[in-house]
Image 1 (spheres, rainbow, N blue to C red):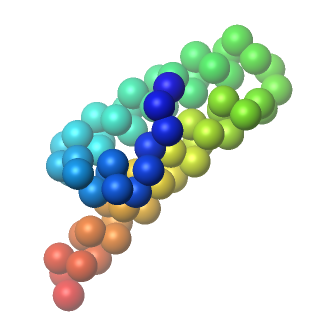
Image 2: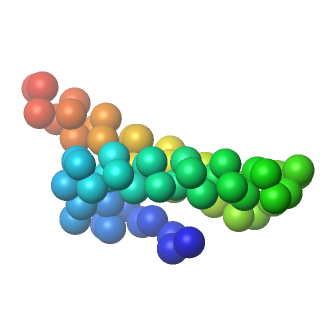
Length: 65
């Protein structure tokens, strides 16, 4: 699982970001099944998902202005 940075998200199209979110959600569900507790991996996956969602909404907000 690679870290997703803002500059990487900026290079992605909206469809690529949505696809990546789906992949991360699947990976998060797999990680939660194997480990009953929240660990560093699940925390980083959640942060990456939040980062992508935030980037999507900020881009949409700029388009609407």
